[in-house]
Each structure stands twice: as structure tokens, then as C-alpha cells.
Length: 566
Image 1 (cartoon, rainbow, N blue to C red):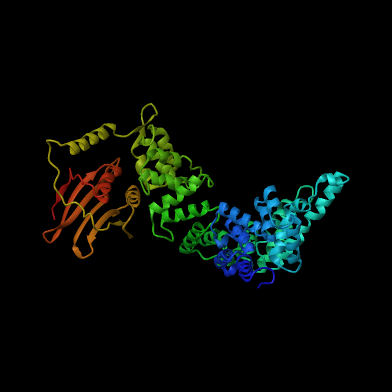
Image 2 (spheres, rainbow, N blue to C red):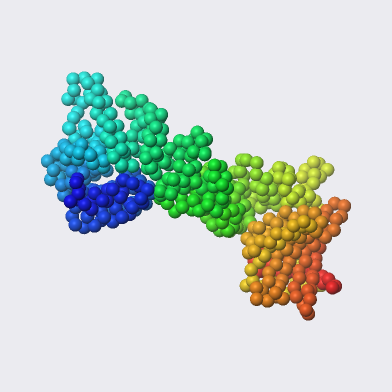
């Protein structure tokens, strides 16, 4: 038999409230369940305390939350005569007049005296419970004390002051006795003070953090690391966050990940950053929108994880829907809605998110400029679109898009070569619905089973991206410059037969006085060699439909393509 409670209950208390770094809380939970099945009244209230959630136990234990079940367990504990359950029932709101009259213990004072005796004998958990009695003014109900019992208001206030301060002694005793979670209310008391009783003493809260972090309590390692973080003492904060995280303190995961991502006081390591952000998301911490944003951005960029727009969008949208991160993910979500990456293409939502970007983000300005100039997601407004494109003019794709517009005689921004644009539109319609002109050649379409590879090649460099997302393909095309020998190639090859391949590429073909001319080329094996078919286009954006059709395995219209002689 344990000294203060049954063996199972004392072991469970040790696992759940002492030595948090051992991470044996789940074992303690199971021990309480076993003790409950054997009718242990104290186990009932302690199991209830676990089920009430993070205000009652350490987050790192990740206990399930079921307040209704917890209320029933507390009720049963009181009715079975547990003094511990009786005091805890007061804190959980279960103790009412009816239960107080029906409970087997003679009074609340009887329960208090039983637990006080255990606390005075050195049980740290009972010391925390007694601290709660004074912190939450429960001693008034326990002693059945009313203001009318005192000669004056001053005398009553003096009594309150004298008793309230007792919680400090009991909480510190519990902390020193090993109950790592006993200081939560004490810290609040130091930070906020108690109106009419105790002024705020934030310096004492920091000292509390420092002392118990040094004792190895992971929750206090986290608290003290936050203090150091706020003071920009990152060389000291980072190792403390790491110790807390290693001991299972879930609130530390985000900070460790952030240090690795930014390379501050830690080696830059995106893979580790992503790992810690994911751990934070998988934990039961109540505030995690920042983790969703950071990991979403990493999936968007392909940093530390394989690029995945579907995951990026889900993470970033969750954070945005939480309403707790402002416009942090506005550019990413605007991009996803513009290109249909990770979600359906929606130009209206793309405009909404991109217009929420209130920092210098040239990529966002380019997309907004394109949307306004082309009337996507709302009315066409070329002047406004151009203003955004000019803010993004360092980007090659913005420069290319700007080349499509000019000011007319009256100073109004208009699209260049409007007549030619209409003619191109008519030609597209003819290719869609038939024409008495020359028919489109019947060229091989790409395979629907082979993976795509995106190659971006210049005079000095060649970069391959296996299985690219379509957004990468489109972005590469929009980024094509007039640099000689620059090519964008979308190609595929049978992994079991190097002679079975198909590719489409876009490159600068020639230069005229006003505009660059671009070349779209398709190639495939034929008669032991390679057959090439080409078409010239005036605007780079005219290449997009061909690459879109190839990537998404739509039927490619080869109207206007001409075979090149070997």
C-alpha cells in the first residue's frame, strides 16, 4: 500500500505529475483506469482530472478530453468518499449544494483536513491541491465564512489577504517536491497580481521559470526559453527549447523548427524544421496556426520536403481559416487559386488573397497585374494591372506581360495590337470548330503513363525537375527571357526504353524591332532518328495552352506546326 494513496494511484500520480521528461503519462492513465475498475475512489477523480484537458495536466501527455465523462467520474469519486475527489470537485464545478448534502464525508472541511494532513506530511500533489484551495478562494466555502462574520470590510479584506498568500507557500512546496505543473497558477499570480491583495511581480515569474528550468522540468524549460527569446538571447534560448522538445514539451516544437528554418543560433536545416513543424501540428497544443503556415510554405517551395502544392494549400488554408494569422499566407493562396495548384482554379479568390498582400512581394504584384489586365476574377482594368506589373518589373515574366500594353493617344493604357489579338482569337476558333484551310497535322500525343521532366536550360546551366507540378511549368514559361540559348523543355521518356520519348520546348526564335518571336517545338522518334515540328508565336503567353494540354494529357491542337527537314 502506498504512503498516501493506493500503490497504483501513487505510481500514476508520479508518472503524470512528476518527472515529465520520462514521458510515462500514458502508463499513468492506464493505471488509473485499472484502479477505477477495482473501485478506487481517488483514482476516479484523478482520471477525471486527466480527461478535463490541458488546464489540469501537462500538454505533453496528450490525454483525450471528455468533460462529460470527467464530470461523472468526479461525481462518483465524491459519492465514494474520496477527500481528494471532494476538493477537486470544487475546482471542476461539479460540487453543488445537492452533492454536498449527499456526499458521505461529513463536510468540505473534513475533506480539506484529510488532504491538508497529507500535504503537511510531504505529499507534493496534495500540496498543490491545498494551494488551489487558497488561490481560488475555496477556503471561504470550506470554512463557511461570509463577509458578515467580520466587524468591518477592512477586517474581512485582511483575512482574505492573509489566506490568499498561503497559496504561494503550498505551490512552491509542491514544485520543490517534484510536481512540475504546480506552478501554473503561481506564475499567473506573479504576472497579473491579485486585485487588492498582491501587485503584479513579473520579475518573480521569470525567476520561477529560471529556477525550475534548471531543475529539468520541461514545461519550465519552455517558459524560460520563451523569456530568453523575448530578450533576443537566442544562443541561450535555442538549447533550452531543444531540451524541452526532447522531453516531449509540444509547445517547444514550433520554436525549434523556426530556429532550424532561419538558421539563427542553430545550423540551417529545412528538413529538421519541417519535422518539428509537423510534430507541433500532430500535437494537442491549442495554438498551431503558425506551424501550419510555416510547413505550408515549405511544401509550397519544396524546402526540406518534396514540393507538394496539395499539402501546401491544405496547410495554408487551415491556418487562414483559423483567423489567427492575418494575411500571412495571402500570396501562397493567391498563387494556388491563380494556377489551380492544390485546389480548383478560382480567379475571384486569387484576386481576393493577392489584394491582401500589403508587403513588397513582386510575385504577388505580377499575378495581380495579369489578373487585372486580362479581366480574370473581376472587371478588366488594364491601367491598374499595369501599375501592379510595374511594381514587379524586376521579374522577367512581368516585363514580358508589360510588353503587351501601351498608352494610346489619349494617355489611356490599352492592349497592343488589338486587331492582331482578335485575329489570333479567330484562328483559335477555327482550329476548334474546323476550317476549310489546311488541316492540323496528326502528330503523336505524349504518353499518359510516363512521368514528366521539366528542363530549364541556358547557355551556362541546365536544371532538371522530375515530376514537376504544373505551376512550376507555367512559372518557368512566364520567366523565359531573351537570353540566347535559353530553353524550356517538357519531356518524358519510357524508363524501360530510351528510344521512346516525346518532348515540347519553347525558346526565343528571333528578334524583331518591337517584340521577340518565340518557337514552340515538338519532337519524337521516327525512322531511327528524331522528327521535329515547329511553330512560331509572337507572345510568350501563347505557349501556355500547348504546355497546359501536354501536361494534363488533353488533345494538343497542332494547327500551324510545320515539319522541319533534318
